[in-house]
Length: 219
Image (tube, rainbow, N blue to C red; front, side):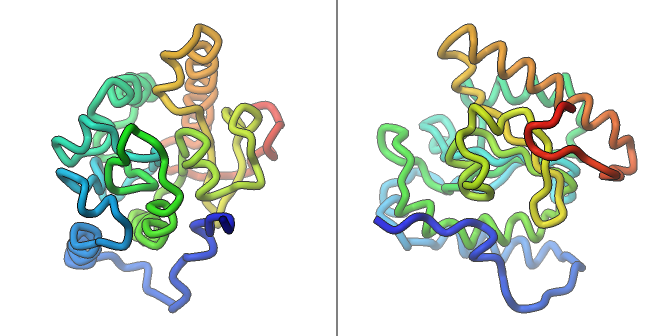
């Protein structure tokens, strides 16, 4: 099977204004809700689009909705979501400062990441990022990382290091669900969360990126 296109490769090519309107966001949501580009569209209970601010400083990008998310139509409301919320609290982010989306918008059976669904959802993810205009993207897990920067794989090496993507700050982390699998992964999650906290503190209230280290450099 051909490799998946990245968000960069499906980014809208038509020049667009940076002005955003709620009607534009609603149109995008309706497109996602009506989508049947892959089999998951007919299997889902709810499409899972977004939660949080429409003008976030930090955008967390997960891999795919779980069963809990499918039931309520909101990303990261299950066990992994509680761990993510704990991180957000420790980071001191207000509700107006962060948002959460997924690479895939529908729950895949048995929680198996679907390349077909990811390919269908890529344009939606690109448009979400374009509309939300965050200062920083935090991909959670290997599939979220590969949607943006497959060149940084494996996630075990990329997690916790700061880089840039399309002029935005880019800080990968392991998936919060992985932190429950072993003591080592839980420590990695907590360590990288502390590193992210330092980065955000350095940015300050105005979110000035300044000079940032390359991946692999200490934060």
